[in-house]
Each structure stands twice: as C-alpha cells, then as structure tokens.
Length: 239
Image 1 (spheres, rainbow, N blue to C red):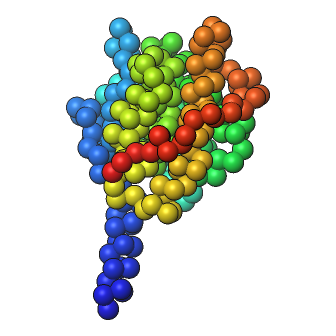
Image 2: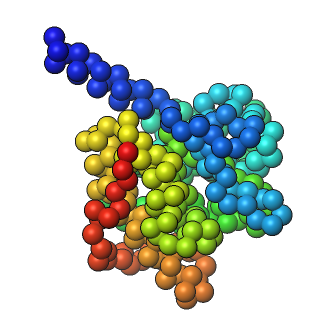
C-alpha cells in the first residue's frame, strides 16, 4: 500500500507540474504564468516571455497590453497550437502577427535543424522590434524552450553580459530544468540536460562569434556545429 501511495503521489505531482508553471507573472495586467518582460527598448517596445495562453481571456490580455506579435515556439502535440491561433485571430491578430516555429523540447539530436529554428525565432523577435511591435513568445509551460530562447535573446541583445548570467538569471530562476523542483528528473530534467542545454551553449558560442564579426542573424551561422570544451555539470539548475 505504501509503495502504491508513493507511486500515485509521484504521478499526481508529475501531472500537476505538466499542467502549468508555478511561477507567477511579473507583468501587470497579464495573468499568464511565468510571464516576464525580458527586454524593452527606449521607445517602450518590449519582448515578453511566458507560458502558453490557455484561454480566450488570456489571449485578450495580450492584445490589451499592446502585444502585436506572438511567437509560438513549440511543437503542436494535441491541437493546442491550432486552437491558440484561432483565439489569437479572434482577438484581432493577423496571420502576419503570428509565427509558429515547431521547436521540440527533447529530440534535439540534429544541431543544424535546432540551430536553424532558433535563428528563425531570434529573427522574428528582432524584426518585431525593428517595426516597433512588442512581442510575446512561449512554449508549453514557459520554462524550458522559452527559457532557452529568452537566454539566447538576452545574450544577443546584450541584456546579459555572459552565458552564465543568462543561464542563472533568465533560465534557472524562471523554472528551466531543475529550476522548477516539481519537474520529473528522469523524464524531463535529464533529457533537457542531455540535449537542450548543450544546444543553448553551442548557440551562445555562435551568437558571440557573429556579434564579434559584425554578422547579422542568419541561418548560415548553423553550417558548422561548435565544439564544447566545458563541463556541462557547471550548467545545471538547482531546485
């Protein structure tokens, strides 16, 4: 009976984690969990991150805040992306104001493909700012893929001065892998450490090299996969 109860508790805990992020929004007027402003320029055009909006009301909050572009950075597993796009259009977002990039959360064994999708996402954010359009991006729970992209944008925009700072402050502090202590270790945390974190570190190297050379964000950056000469144990969040 004790073992059965333990298994049931573990299952429920894992399921409750999967439903939504436990991190509250820091954006006034936005109830979507784990929503934060990660960049704002002198004109007030902002880049926001968060969990996926799961109701018409939350989508309307984005519109009311002046969000003009939504980037969906995740695969569609159960039709949830199509449903969100329907809600976004009903709230007044045009086709051009919605971008879906089907970035997986664990199956990242093809670096070039992952790099290409990441560059596309960063380009969407950059172009949105150039048009003075505030943008909101998300994955499912708003912690792993969202944290990954937020950390890289923070480095590219020079909001963060180092890879370590972006990893600790933008990723771990907002639920990346074990930064959310409720996240299942074997099914989620271990897989993220195996694939997503190395991809983050390799992308950080590419972006740093591109900036030093004065290059633009371009998928040609993905032609050669960087070699990591650091210990991955340094880049593990603590719950």
